[in-house]
Amino acid sequence: MAAYLALPEVLRGLGVDLADVLDAASLPASIFDDSENRVAYADLGRLLAVSARLSNCGHIALLAAQHVRLVDMGLAGQAALCGETAGDGLKRLVHHFALQNTAATLNLSTSGDFTRFVYAIVAPDMDDTGHFQLGAMTVAFNILQDLCGPAWRPTVVTFACRAPANLRPFQRFFRSPLRFDSDESALVFDNHWLLRSLAWVDPLVRERIEAELREQQAALLADFPTTVRGLLHKQLMLAECSMDAIAAIFGMHRRTLDRRLQRHGTTYSEMRASVQSDVACQLLRDTKMPVQQVAESLRFASAANFSTAFRRWTGVTPTEYRRVVEAGRANDCPVQSPTYPALE
Image (cartoon, rainbow, N blue to C red; front, side, top):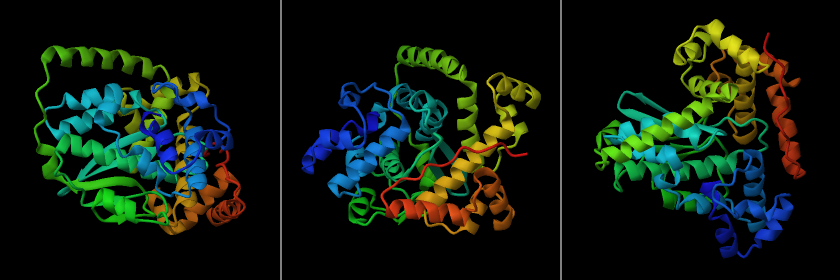
């Protein structure tokens, strides 16, 4: 919610009454009373979509998020600032991001001379994630500048959503090549930026932050399925989401992982199917990526194999699902992703 606290002011600047927006989104006015208020991602997504529609401003998420900095990222942001280098700080932010936001995840991946800083939504049952993707990359840009310095620029910015009608505000803000209809929302940049030294942090301050991190991480692990779900999203990006790989990250045997999930009424195969399904639906719904490309993003051997799995998850083919979504958009009726059975 912190990333969108500026939304009321943005709406006023666009001549839109916040009360009208909240009423149309079926949300209470009290959600902006406290920066610590927890708002479901689905509700926040609906709020952004209604705000964009009533203001006729396709870049409203950029306007609301452009002043959010690393210091607004709570304990995860403080952990990042304790790093010795920008790369160390980013790793800390990625590792502790769930303390700030359990509905999305961050990932850092280096290959060759370039690094990708990736944002992905893990919350299920989202109608439309486009505004989140735009806002998240706006915040991510500011975070990288806070860590790497004001001269930092990405080589390219990718968005897992369709291009807005007016690209000029994004071009002015990012001042870098923009690619929409991508399989991920990410900032891609040269590795040398990771070596920048960060400001010295008092050891006593660092010790206090580390103690708070340990305490909150322990509390977070109590919701084990949510933790596994977020990790599955990260590993899916790296094509390393086997049960053995996930269990190894937790330092446990795969049988122990499955037993812990079963205590919460689910299994690893059910969670993996749910994550794959959510990612597939998001890409089919929010981008114009061809079905073949979506299949490749999810590491299926062929579009045919992907279509078979997608039909098993949803009851329809990827093409049929996209057709229903487009019909819903034409009638201003959002289409929610269905609830999926487990993969056999």
